[in-house]
Length: 463
Ligand code: 4AD
Ligand code: MG
Image 1: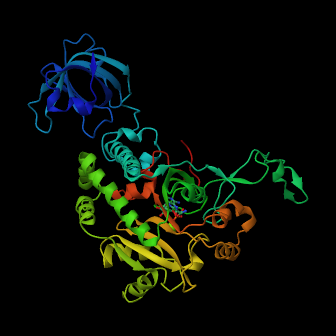
Image 2: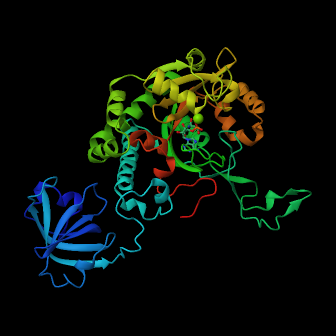
Image 3: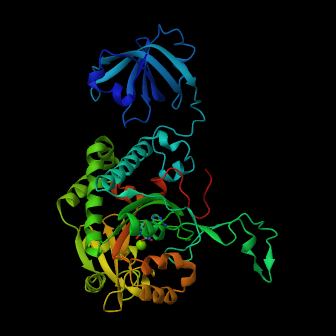
C-alpha cells in the first residue's frame, strides 16, 4: 500500500489513488447521514486532509465515534475529488486503525484561543498547532537555504567545537563545563583547582565559533559554521535566548564592503526561498500574525539595504526629535529602540551600520585609521533590530595584541589565534546571523521563545 503524506493527499494529482494516510486528528464532526468527517494533519503542510468515515466501517461505533482531537490514526482509503470548497480532494476511508486515543477532556490543546504564553508551558505538544507547525517548516526551509546559499558559492561547511576555552566575544557570558564535584571542589589555596577538572583547565560552552572558523578560513578560503551557541547573559527579552543557532561565514581576502554585500545577498536569498518554498505558511503568518509581513519582505527584496556609519546614525537619531528611553550619544551602544527607529520609522528598510566605536566592540575587529572606530557591521532589520553582527578582522599582530590587553584578555591564552597573524596573515572578514531572529523577521512572531522548539532562557529549561 502506498503511503501518502497529507500534503500529497491534498493534491489533485492524487485523485483516484488508494493509499495509507497517517496523522493526528484535528477535529471530528459526525453527520446525521451516518458518517463522520475527520480532519487529519501530519505536519507535512499547514492544511488538513478531510477523511470520510462511513458507519459501515467495522470499528465505527467502537472507535471512530470516540476519536478526539489529538488522537493518532492510519487511514486506508481512496483519494477523491472533493465537492467542498477550499480543498481539491478528500479521502473515503476503507479502514481506519487507531494507533493512539486522546481524551478530549484532558487534551491540553483545546480548539481555539490558546495564548503563546500558555503554549510555551506545553512545548512538547505545541508543534501540533497551526502556528508552531508553520514555524517548524519555515525554520527547516531557512536551514536548507543557508546550506544551499553557501554551498553554491563554494563555501566549506566546517564544525568548530561546542566546548571551548576561549571567550570569543570577550563578554564573560559563558556557561562553564565541568565534572568537578560542586559540593567539594579540589582547591589550591582559596581557588578551585581546575587542573583537576576534566580538561585540566576551565572550559565553557562556546558563544561563537568565529575564532575557530578563522583558522579554517586562513587555510581553506571561504568557510561557514552553523550550529548552536550559548550565552549566559541574564537578559529576559523577547530577542534573547541562552541557547540559539548561529550561521557564521568567514572569508579570507574579504574586506568589510565584501562582507556587507555577502550579508545582504544572504538575507535576500533566505527571504526569496521562504516566499517560494513555504508559500502557504507565509500566507498564514500574514493572515494570523502580522498583516504586513508579505509586503514588507517583498519590498525588502526589491530595494537595497542602506549602508550608514555609526557616526551618521547617531546624528540621525539625535536630530530625530524623538524621545528615547536611553539617550543617544557618540560612544554608547545603540539600543533596540534606536535600531528599530532607524529601520522602521526613519529609513523603513534594512540598514547596515558600520564603523562602530572601538570601545563597544570585541577585540578581533579591525581598527580603522582614525584609531577610534573599528570595521564592525551590524545588519538591522524592521521588526527585529540586529539580525547580523560581523566585521573585518584585525590581521595585524601587534594591533591585535594591544586590543586584547585593552579588553582584558590575556594574549597567552589565544596564542593559536595570534599564530594566524604570525604566519601568512591575511585580510579577512565574517559575520554571524542569528537563526531565531531570522525566523522572527520572516514570520512576524513577537517572541524568540516561540521560534525554537525548546527555548532556553534564564530560569527555564523544563523540556
Ligand atoms: O553580534 P554577535 O554577538 O556576533 C558574534 O557572535 C560574532 N562572533 C559573529 C561573527 O562575526 N562570526 O551575534 C551574532 C548574531 C546577532 O546579530 C543575533 O542575530 C544573534 O547572533 N544573537 C542572538 N540570538 C538570540 N539570542 C541571543 N542571546 C543572541 N545573541 C546574539
Ligand atoms: Mg552583535
